[in-house]
Length: 109
Image 1 (spheres, rainbow, N blue to C red):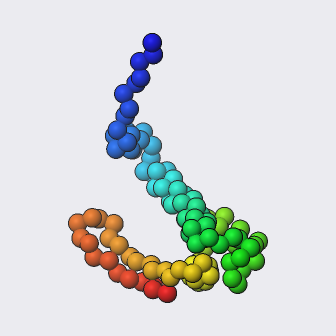
Image 2: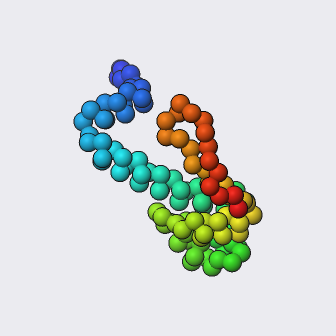
């Protein structure tokens, strides 16, 4: 009979990680993770709208594929892509520290 190891709390994992890995490496990893998440979300947005890559108005299939696989995208391209998927976009600046809930709307298109 194999005993299961107790699962470690995810929060404590990050605290443990910070004790052994330099902060700049953690920051770089988080930045890269956000870029990867953006790629997934762009494809998911299109798919949830029921649109195939070949059917995104104003974009070729190759362009859509490139947009959805890029780790960085110009805001104007993002706005055009989101509009072509039948959606609007808002970009907000939010405080890093959760003490205040002030948000600043940068773009609504």
